[in-house]
Length: 382
Image (cartoon, rainbow, N blue to C red; front, side):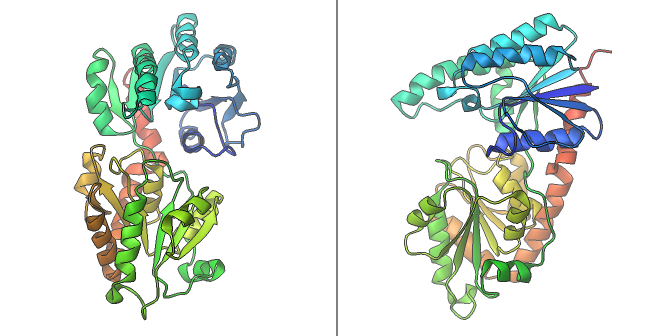
């Protein structure tokens, strides 16, 4: 079997879905032939995978060039990684459905799948109300063209299944884009310049609108005022890994922050080893599309996150076992969970071990690739 993946960005570009594409391709190539079609001029190599600079974006119509690249050796499955804003400004690219329609007409044996990493913007402003009109139409067109549809979270799979009644609709979670290194905690802290007994709260990823900074501040303050959870009244430290260090420091005010900046994957892994508690609060709740949350599970880092309308039942069931989840609209509950976890080393170890086992069993890229192949093979023509 041959599977071709499509996404505009690939490493070294900073893009979570681009990283996901590379990691998924690397896992898939262990079982099938894989190509990646991208607009990235100089993409990092993926072992065993042919990465093709197939089109350019912008302009939007540049996506039409993908036909020449895919058509050289049409795959059994063409899997489009989709986020509205990755294919055009304002989340608009009418040429993408057209390009895929032409490919299906020119190569009838080829099957098309789309993995939706997002749906469309909600109507929270006049601007979003305008954008959502074409994004909804684009979303429906891509689904209607597909032979199989995947969503990165179960709530979207359940919500949109009725939109595509004649097409199999499935759930495919994301994994962590970070390699896991078993670095020594004490050594890593020494290298970073963090005291061995300093309570460290970790934060990882860009500060997009879904991040609840109020919850992070509340957690820090709860731990900083709780003498039972700190070592000899040492102030806690916020260890931030990501591109928005200056903004994060401003948002945290006078609280102690160590901004590590954007780091390569191995260094991100090492910094996770320095954390006592990882804070991952999301306004719509944690879900199986949050790669930054998955990194906490992967590393066995005791994690506090949020429950919301997009939280998968699978994650709800492991609340208190693999992570601690607080209602997204209750920063005080989130802060209490972080404080209680920081105060209990045995609890942190137990939570971390369960989290790591859950990740390896359910969310590693090898597991995700196997699940994808199983579902695709169900509809491959004989």
